[in-house]
Image (tube, rainbow over all chains, first blue to last red):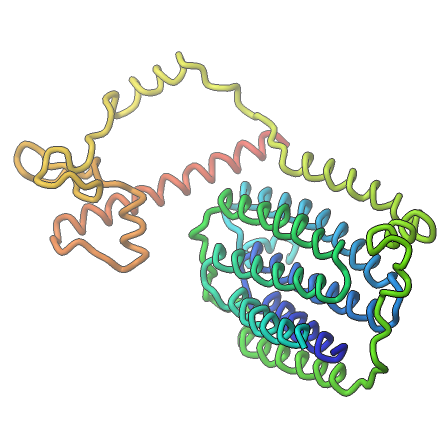
Amino acid sequence: MTTHYLVLSALLFAIGGAGVLVRRNAIVVFMCVELMLNACNLAFVTFARQHGNLDGQLIAFFVMVVAAAEVVIGLAIIVMIFRTRRSASVDDANLLKY
Amino acid sequence: MGETITFWVLAVVSVSAALGLVFSRKAVYSALMLGVVMLSLAVLYAVQDAPFLAAVQIIVYTGAVMMLFLFVLMLVGVDSADSLVETIKGQRFWATIAGLGFAALLALGAGNMVFAPAKGVGAVQEAGGNVPALAQLIFTRHVFAFEITSALLITAALGAMVLAHRERVRPKATQRDLARARFTGPQPSPLPGPGTYALHNAIDMPALLPDGSVSPQSINRVLARHEQEDGVRPTDPVKAALVKQVIDKDVAIEEDVAATEAAHQEDAK
């Protein structure tokens, strides 16, 4: 079963990565990043069971904490950009380009 | 056997929900699809002897993180659809190719690995079960990382407060100011309500003036905008022209407000 779980995790990770590349809405891009983090967690939990120790589950727990902090900051930044530029599209935030 | 069935059902559900997350045009649907993926992953954790993580996944992800996403979606505007303009030429095509290639690479790599039968975590969590075993690890070997986590959470909370805080650049308008602005403005009275003078009592029917013509002030701006976005135009050409006029005026006002806000922020700096 380990292989099955790992392939599922790989598929979810790749879908999330493709979403980050394709989508333009900053919030949806953020959701795709969350999807990639979740896929990694699945792989960690699977490896924890494969190797018979709990360190994988522990790392997944830490990943969840970091993801929660990241979501808070990221969404605050998106709200701030939206307030000044009236847009949540990643194409519109291009002032650093020049 | 039970695990195999659970896995296949949830694998199909989560992969199709993930595809829906990427392909749905409205951001709210994407958020709901992400919720489906997270719930199925929680069940997969529970199946793999990680009941604590399954509970945390549901509480933290589907509870807190998804609510935060939906809340910000409501703030930013639910109807903010993706722009279909490609800034980089051919980006969508090549991104899809890259995604497919990456999926194939990872899946083939993982699929070709050969594993011994899984040891299972039953042996290491004999003393009381999953949660005490995890707690023992957290508070002994990984205690330093755990302490750093608290610093991270405090920093995140402070950062969110600093980022989301808005300085008041103008004094708050009192009732006196509001009344003065209203009577110096173009229309002291309330706008004519839609539909109340006509045959219909619906909000999308504009009010009629005494001579039978349509009053442009009674056209609902939000409905007019939705009609324009959905491609539904009034059949009456006079009304269609009025709706277009209202929308144009609305856009002009929005640009004006944005320019004033930008100017105010420049002043604040």
